[in-house]
Length: 159
Image (tube, rainbow, N blue to C red; front, top):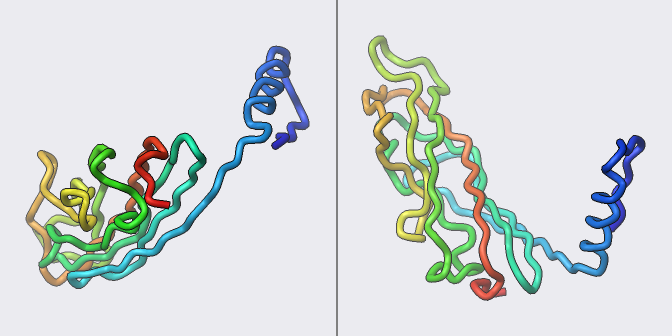
């Protein structure tokens, strides 16, 4: 795998040579997996995983729309449930912004921070954070851009 750069600054040539020598002959595979949305969620979700004989790097991604009346729910199946042995992987979650996609009633939240992650390594879900404002407009639609990267040893793959 050679990388092409038009301009290599002084001191970068050794780094580039070392990186290319390190990557030479390394097999890296990719698999894309889908998710199923649930509990009234709309949008799309899935994941990508890159792996070799030693390690994997993966990400659960999606654009999810939830009704204001159902923010704290399991909204997507875990795309890697049949790919990763979760006993050896640290559960993943992170704070993500949630923003109104439709007009909200006066005095109701139009944005908040929400914790998104795997519910005991099962479905992907939302739960409260210290920054969570639960004054959502039940008639509005809210959106979350999901990006949950994680990595681990290849010994935990079921591929």
